Length: 173
Image (cartoon, rainbow, N blue to C red):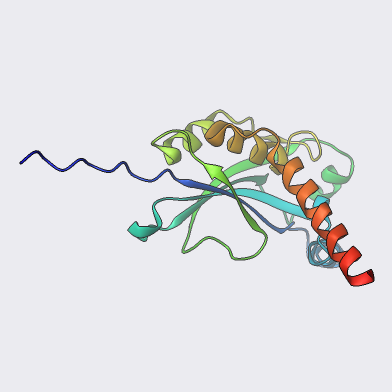
């Protein structure tokens, strides 16, 4: 009897997730939380979540790029003036993929998604400039490296805006 054909391992799922931007305690933090609650796209922190084979019950991994100390007042001032601040690329584990503000954007083209994400992150310049080299650029770049999908955040933003327009038309019509 010939040996059973081995089934290839499923490709790692790639997600983009959004969380509120972190800011110094006080009015800045309240503004960020309110902006996130209202779904204001520019007041969200984006990150990439990798989910290996769900059957394996492995934890998800999240990769992101943010200011080294996002709650520092000096960092907040640099952000407002579009100045460069020290950034850090982070890799953490999650027990599961977030259920809200998290979108499946594709599957990794390589067998070793985590290795590919680590290699991308090691090469990522860590001088952060909001609007020029920030979490959005990192997320777009990492998703493209893993899946081939270009400018994924623009696609997600357009889809979110279209969804809001449809809900508004339904509610008003």
